[in-house]
Amino acid sequence: MNDKFKMWVCQKKTHNKWWTYEVDGNTVTTKYGRIGQKGQARSKTFPDSWDRDKFISSKTWEKTGKGYESVSKEKFDLLTLQAEIMGSGNKIEEMAVVLQDGELFCKVPNQAAYDPNLELGIMISFRLRDKHGATPVQILVFRGDDVLDLQFKRVLSMDAIRAKTKKLGFRPPRYWQGTFKKVDNSHPLFGMVEKLQEVLGSTL
Image (tube, rainbow, N blue to C red; front, side, top):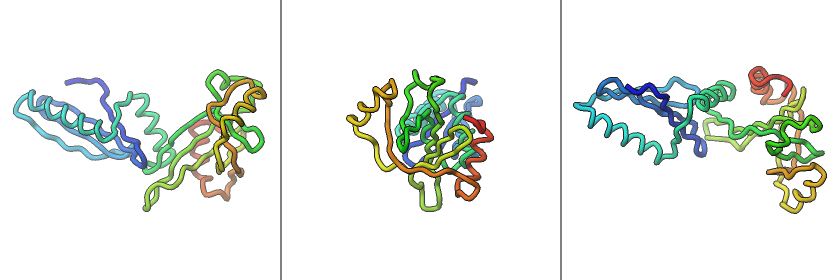
C-alpha cells in the first residue's frame, strides 16, 4: 500500500471539491466531497492488481480531465482551513499584500512586501455561495486595526501604472481604483471578519 499523500482538488468556476483514493490489497476506496467537509466514500474490490491499477489510472485521468489538480498536504490543509473560515460552500480566490494610495489599491510585488516604510495590508478576495450559486467576488483588506470592504470600479491602464511607478519605487503587478467602507458590527460580513481575524491575527 502506498502511504504517499494523494489528493486532488477542483476549484474551477464555482467548484470547491476534493477527491482521493486509498488502496488495501485489491480494494480501492475512493473518497470525495466539498473542501472542508468529511465527504463520502465508495469501495470496490478487483480480482487482481492489474484491474485495480487500471481502475485507479482511469479514475485519476477522469478527474484531471474535469479540472482536478494534485495538491500537497500543506496546500490541502490550507484550503481546509480557509473552508473552516469561509464555510465549505465558499472559497478564497486570492490573498495578497496590498498598498493603499488614496482611493487606489495596488498589489505589492514580493521584493516590496517587507518594506518597513510602506503601510501595507492583506487583501483577501472570495466568493460566497448561496442557493442560486456563487455571488460576485467580495474583497476585504486587513490594514492594521481596520478592515475595509472594497468595491473596485476599474483596473488602471498601463500608462497610469507607469506614472505611479516612480513615486512608489516599484512597478505594481496590478492597480485598482474603487470605493471602500470600513467594516463594523453592522456590516453583513462582520461575523466572517471576526473569524478571519481570529485565525490570521487582528493586526496584519
